[in-house]
Every structure is written in structure tokens, then in C-alpha cells.
Image (cartoon, rainbow, N blue to C red; front, side, top):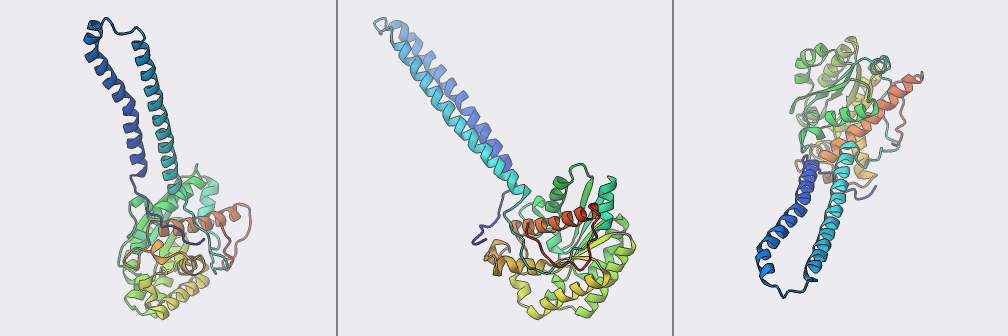
Length: 334
């Protein structure tokens, strides 16, 4: 995919389309009212001008019919355009043109708690835990944050299921701060799945990676003990993170080790985003905002979309009775 245009939808696109349609529909009413006023003003003169040919009213009627037909044609075409825009807005809210990278190492593994709840028809609670990219900094509206995009995708996939995605992202935090609220904001909510995005601020703040590893491993163990599935999300590939290449690579490896040790899922966001830029030739400013760090609407949408595809695939394999090893490393295209 070369030169993919940035995804910058307006949250009011569908509303604007409806307003435009209402405005267009009022046009023929105004035109008819104006014509009626004109006929009323001319009626006295029409009586006085007894020499006017009888064919004149017929000509006026034909002209009125032509005007009405033209107005109807314009309105019809505008209505079709409004429907097209509304459909486009709906499509944008569903999926974006986003290809999964090929050959990117990843391990989602199985999600037994989520799968069992879905199979049993019981409510599913997912907590998105992390920092500003979980909170949604850089998105143009709340519906375009990754947790909300993910929730919409899962509800479309499982329309009869009761699925809740709770956003527990807080800007500027990393493992030290997140561990302080792990119990009250995550474990006490009894989630079935925790998606833990961590490590970016540790890179930017030059935190000790050994301490970060201990804290994240402890957090994963506590979440597992509470009976939830886990997916770790590593840092984003962006200019600010790439200014510290050794630290970024170290964090990616660190989280991979924890995922393998604790046998939990991991979404390789860093490699996925690098694939967008280096292999799919998407300019960085098409998925990262001007601060050089946070994703934009398209970036969050593609991230959520690929993550959701992985979750759906893992749940589907469990439903089919297949065993999904934690070290699966083939990233299938969408």
C-alpha cells in the first residue's frame, strides 16, 4: 500500500450530511412558495390584460413543470450524494484501509477466559490499561480512540454478546505509576481481558529497564492470579521513540521476554508501525501527529483493527477446539 492518505474524519460528518440533506429538501418548498407569491402578485394584472392570449397560462404551467422537474432532479442527485457521504462515514467508523504486516513476529496465544465467556453467553469485560496512547491523545474525538474502536469491532463480530471495553489510560504514566492503580482500576473490576500498553514513557524518561521488567512481570502475575487473560502492547514506532533506538529495542525485547515467561499474549506495535513506514511506504505523518509521538485517527484505527482481528482469531480457534500455543509467530494478513 503506497501513499495511503491520512485518516482524519470529523466526528460530525454524518450529522453534517443529515443537515445538508435537510437544507436541500427545503429548496423545492421555497421555490414553490416564491412561485405562488409571484402568481398572486400577477393575478390582478392578468385580469386587466383581457387581450393576453389564452395560451399564456399553458406556457406558464409548462415552465412550472420544467422548473419542478429540474428542482426534483437536483434534489434527487443531492440526496444520492448525501446518502453516499453518510455511507462513507459509516464505513470509516467500521474499518479503515489497513493491511496487516507480513512476517512480523507476534504472539497472541489463546484467550481462554474471553472465549469461555463468549461461548457461555456471559458478559465480557475488557480493560485497556496504559498511558496516553490508551487514553487516546491525538485522536480527534473519543470514538476514534483505540479502546472505543476495538469495542465497536468486537460488538460487530459478536452482535449478541455483552462486551464492555473500559479505558484506563492515563497520560505520562509508565510501570511505576500504573502499578499503584493496578488493584483499584484493573483487578477490582474483575476483567476477562487486560490489554496492557506499557514501556513508551519508560523509554522517554530513561527509566531503569531492569526495574520496569520486574514491575511489569509482577503486574502480569497479579492479573493472571485474578483470572484474566492478558495482552501486552509494546511502544509505538514514532520519531520521539526512535530518538532512543537502543532503549526502544531493549523495551521491545523486555516485554517479549515477559510475555514468553508468563505465557501471555503480546501485540508487537513497534514492529507493526515500522512495517507501515518501511515496507508499506506510508509516511510517518500519515499515522503520527505533529508531536512526533502519538498516533492520529488512522493510526489508532489500524492498531485497534489488527488487535481486534487477533483477538477474534484467537477466540475462534478456541471455539473450534484448537489449541493455540503461546509462541505462535506467524502474522496472517487480514
